[in-house]
Image 1: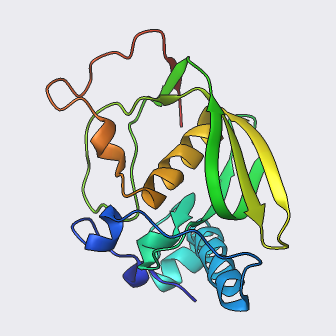
Image 2 (image 1 turned 90 degrees about the vertical axis):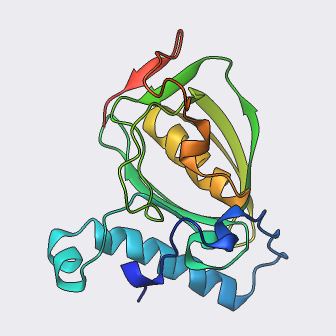
Length: 184
């Protein structure tokens, strides 16, 4: 079982590397890693388990965050309508996106960042993601709102990008023109 201690923190070089593609079909080890990543997210959202194991709550996790430099992400989050989106994906990539932007009104956080980073993070309002699931099948997802933001955040990790790299350093709360505010 993954714990908060297994998650590397900002400043660790793996977080700034571009992760390697996962060789397909995925190995049993890759599938087991994704299973552990999703299990962490599920456990971290369960108040009893989270407290018992001192887990920091999360809705997305990328393999580089557990010091595995491979393109793998797990997401376990509810959208604005309360629908659960739970994924274990290999080699995810954004193949198209809207011109329109969105942002979380509360800003973003990250399991690899143990501090508050104030500021608005501009994201695309809608993205289309292609990836491979653990059965080796290609999947295509059209995403919007919070789930689109979570995917962009995790895919950034695969490219060595941290969420705060997107914040305007001179004016962190500069309104993002025409962007859709998303409450969380």
